[in-house]
View 1 (cartoon, rainbow, N blue to C red):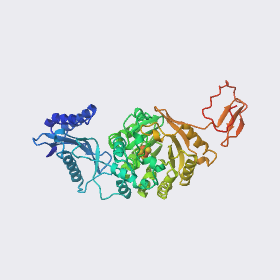
View 2 (view 1 turned 120 degrees about the vertical axis):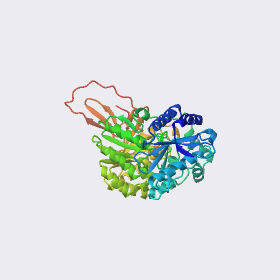
View 3 (view 1 turned 90 degrees about the horizontal axis):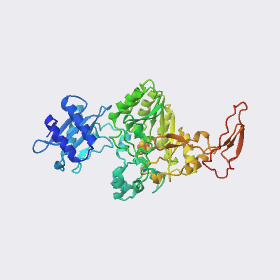
View 4 (view 1 turned 60 degrees about the vertical axis):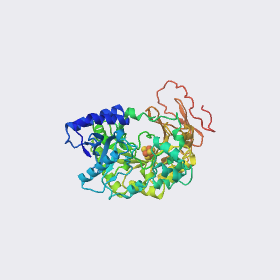
Length: 510
Ligand code: SF4
């Protein structure tokens, strides 16, 4: 039987939570706090606590649940724990079924489903769980949600589809999230090609001593869980933990796909933070992927940011046009265009990702007056070739996307096999500037480890600078002299900087 928690249940519930050995001491503290508030005010609307009884009428398990913030149709199962002695008796399933029925009763809906991507596993081995979402809608699914439901995510499916060893895939899945949309899987033509390398899990991800989980130290610049505030006038607002497909090289591998790290309950805190920081004039809405939220939820967030008077521009960072272009609908762009000035930064890494489907999605966004920029990550075996990169940049311009950044891959755990040398990036930049339209040339940058921010890296075009002249090298390696302004005040001679990059065939520095 399931009933609301009472004061006499508190000690045994705390005992069974600890016995699961699933939660940290700090988490047990939070669970206790939530229980105390609930026992004090059982009629409050924020959340509820129930227990499932054991054969003696004591608590065999408990659950904290409540409405998902900002969503009218979803509920979260925040905490659940079942005593180890009651494992295998279906207590967890009982709790989840009760919650589904309760959610349905409250909304007058009998057709309950788990939201796409949520995993409420309550088999005998599962004795505890943190946040899971339950959505009460199933009949009004959009086409993109249906496609997303068909994404490859189970290790068995992935292993079968790509001919991998099932045990190896299982090992990787325990550490890093895996999911590939059927659309993106369809772009993979052969084992090890550019699209394969970006999405198909590889045992090299488990290589020890490679990279850091948070190389950019974002967590240190995070005043509230949904905000990263590093630069003076702009901040990152993390609003969705999920992505349509999980890229093997992701900088936020530690967070994506984990609702306890990026969760809707932190969104109001993020809005409050931005409201109280008048210096923030540019908000980058990111995740995970913000376009994984439904239109209504996304609008609540975008509208909330737009209502803050000192926010001048809103940017949305998304990989959806590349991996699930069907998600970009007329309904979505009609909503977004209400909140101009709004920019969208997309993420394409290879020219073959620009397909009729992704071009349609980008055209919809561009037609809504949304300026589009692209961020590319330099990846070994994907785009570490000047011809491939040039074609990518040219194709992006042809679909009205301005190449914005080319990033040196971050020093992230589990991605060493995808990193290239910085010299390779400089070689690619040499092969872009001058050889194709200036519009097609992105900034090449390293996001400095330790939180130093994005640092632009340029091939050495400025060869020497004196009071009288500047020696410049053009894209073809030829030298030219530019005279300095004559009335310039004399300055102390500056020691020549050592060359940090040598260009094959360029004459030595004067
Ligand atoms: S879509 Fe972006 S956030 Fe999501 S896994 Fe790929 S790189 Fe990471």
